[in-house]
Length: 532
Image (cartoon, rainbow, N blue to C red; front, side):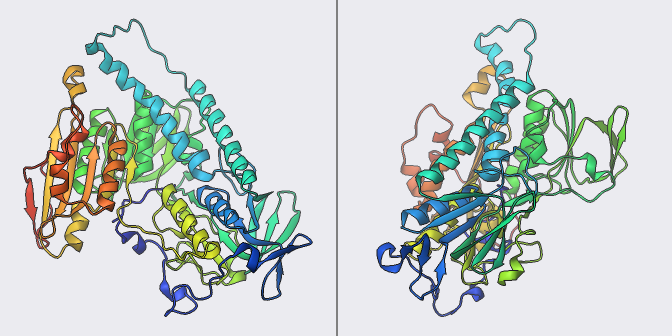
């Protein structure tokens, strides 16, 4: 699921479509919700659900899309006693209008296979670093792309089966095909051969995720997206990547780590727009340090096929030849084929489904979670939204998703991880001054390997309350460390709490509880500085 570098205390709403006006009664946040009391609310009659108002439906809940959010919502709703069905496309590593798979983008063509490739790419640096630790490697070390790809595919096939078993064990009916709305209580599931079947449900949950997009330039058909990048038959020796987001940065690290020549083009001065500016500069420096050629402030204008590969022309006149061109320029909500207008479900200008704070659409019986709503596009967010939906509708526990202090990571090499507010966001929200604590140091491992790559840590603190507003780290194991820091921020930890915590020595993580020297004090009227 595509990450947004957003103010995780709620700024994701500016991209999302959360709209309290969609509630049936604005004065009552849960007006019209139908809570399930399994034995009192319904009973089964000839396979149908007999609803209290006399209407009959095939299911209490029909879910379109068996990705992370859809599977979670189905299982929890079923655990509350609901009769649930879910539809999903047949499995394939590369998605299309008729291909998908249980587990969705994250499991099949996103987070999981990407992380497997990151592991594979990381070994090159480890081999280099090992020499000063006494390891003598004689001769060439060969990398077998096809072997890694085979093992990656075997793993996502296994996980696809795991998700199917989880649904079966939860009592959820699985239906294969592409789902679309007929009305606010009816879903039509279509097959590639043209056959169709309709199902009715008291509630419908849409969890169809998002799709990678291609830039509209001449020769765009020669480029690939992240879907294809995870399943290339041949390893590319020369790669051009367009984009400055987390997908672009991660694939640049992956391919460079495996030995490819990589050129990364992006429109801004630094990659990872929306993340803390200071940390963005660190990531850019690390990418260059690993041998990736950066082209800031540059776009691609044309691609063409030549005998030697793909000719890439940049808008500033630069020309390159590449084996692969990756467009990593964003994703769009996967809502086009859902026939949403038939049920009166509203979307925004990019096709994201508009929902209220409980994930309810403009049609009272239709709900939506995950990337298709374009709030904060992360797998754990889809899981949270789906959990809250099921508790609200079937558990009798009205629950809103909480978007404060959402941690995230960019699995570059080395990785970046953040939680809470960036320095820029803190200054926008703070009523007073912001205290910034930073630490830049050479990790113990690098002192022996002689790798010139520092670990960077940062804490952003409210000067008035002493509360830690944000934390970020770029360095080995950053996501593992920030996950723990996220618990502290969620609990309202102050800088004094950090300072009074005993560190684990020797570790990089202990630096977060020993940063006692103030780097700078910034007022809302001043511009953030960088000192790393």
